[in-house]
Length: 302
Image (cartoon, rainbow, N blue to C red; front, side, top):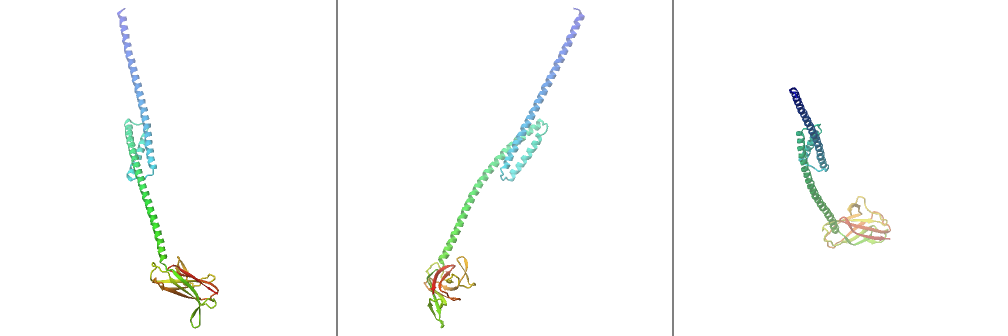
């Protein structure tokens, strides 16, 4: 082989060597760029996935706060302020996560803030649960006290009613009661003297004699005795202006006297002059004292 041919072959080999190196370098650059792009794409996918997960976490936190609000528990100012701040932070996080891209620093900050919010909501719910239990306990105590108050009021009303009934019974028991009630008709002679009669045509007045039943509860004092007279037709014979109260109502009376009661079996008498003519039949009388019926009697006239 000639010296010139040897030089040519050596030059070709050098070209091939440098060409090979260039190709290898180019391949290496392509491989580097491929893996770099692949890593960037994977990192972008990872960031987006984490951003979606954080959005879901924020929505869960907001739902938990809404549940607390739905309880309709009376919150103190501190808890209301804490809830308002939490909702402001949630709104800020939602706005941040809606951005097209997040830097790694922004993503890390959002992760930390969401973690803090989750801890706050957990503690917040625990506080709400504690308040709910306290409120339930207070409600039970209040209901128990209200029940006791109602029972006391019921007993007080019952006692008041019993006292009222007892007072009425005492008042009734203390009222004077008539005994030996005797009703007679009398004619009045020209000389003013009176004599008993059974004749309606000659009768001018009625005389009611009675005694008082012994009663230690009755007040030893002056008592007013009211007389009501009814003719055979059942009509009350009384002046419209003569009024008194008995059995809880206003009544007219025919006549009235005042007696001094000393519980000594004294006999009393009422004389009632009929302003009209007597008629045949039965005249009935009712005596009242201390607001109650004292006694009754009647007389038949021919």
